[in-house]
Image (cartoon, rainbow, N blue to C red; front, side):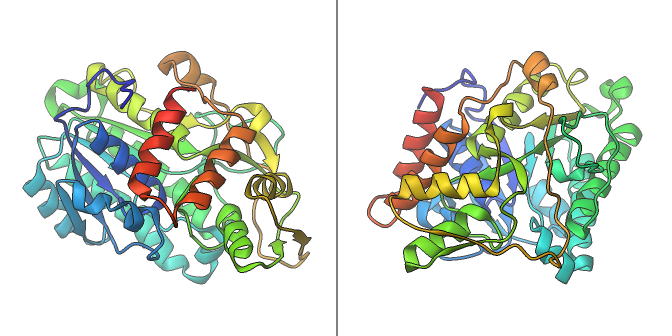
Amino acid sequence: MIDIFNAFYHGKRVLVTGHTGFKGSWLSIWLHELGAEVAGVSQEPFSERDNFVLSGIGKKIKADIRADIRDGERMKQIFREYQPEIVFHLAAQPLVRLSYEIPVDTYQTNVMGTINILEAIRLTDSVKVGIMITTDKCYENKEQIWGYRENEPMGGYDPYSSSKGAAEIAIASWRNSFFNPARYEKHCKSIASVRAGNVIGGGDWALDRIIPDCIKALEAGRTIDIRSPKAIRPWQHVLEPLSGYMTLAQKMWNEPTRYCEGWNFGPKAESISTVWEVATKAIENYGSGELRDLSDPDALHEARLLMLDISKAKFLLGWEPRMDINRTVALTVDWYKRYRKERVYDVCVGQIEEYLSN
């Protein structure tokens, strides 16, 4: 595999929370291909068709552990056993609409779960780098037409978004209190939070997400119902933010006090599109299908306009997205057209290669 990290991950002990999820499974495959010793901690995958299940990555990595991040003592025990050097924390309740139904669970998972991981990091000497994944929805959304920068206020209207804003505040507090860069020689840890846009890619079957909704309808021969056709999002392929997280972790390992802060990883401005436009591109790449506008003026609140400013990652990390919206949707739909007939692990590795060769 093309290794843009110059063998940095080879032999590193890496712990991934949420490895059975959509982003976590792709990250685990990539790290495994780079020779990392990956331990994954997560609850059961969402469905039997998830990328995690179909790729078989759980059988390839060093440890595939079922545990709940809300169980702080269990997290400390796992950290003690596997002695990770780098932690990518992705485990979360990730859905806006579901957060209206289970607001307390959403907060317990996204806030206290994150604090439990921070505590496990604090109490495990082997950990040098912690990448805490939140979301672009952690910002106080004013529906502004320019992208949010990393120093803007945290907030959130719905329980999901506000829980991620609260998690960001907790991460900043733990960094100030226990992982302060001014006292690095004492704790020897570097912690950053990362925020990505609307991530799409193969193997995601979650509820209330546009690509899974499109594919489910297309496979069933149904019309695709679009809830919020005019909502504007920063769409990006799953490999884009993952490359950013992995680049950041490498930089933090080498210069731990320089990069331990918040970072945005979003698409280029021209990839910021409406839900309707993305669904239209999905149909074009799939080769069939129809859309239907099901806008409901009384629907639960979801942000209509949300964009990220990625200048900081571009200039300080040397990271920027490789693909435009057309390539992003094409690569995503390609997975769904192939997963029934081909070895999914090979499809994923091939797509990572293709992404890196762009």
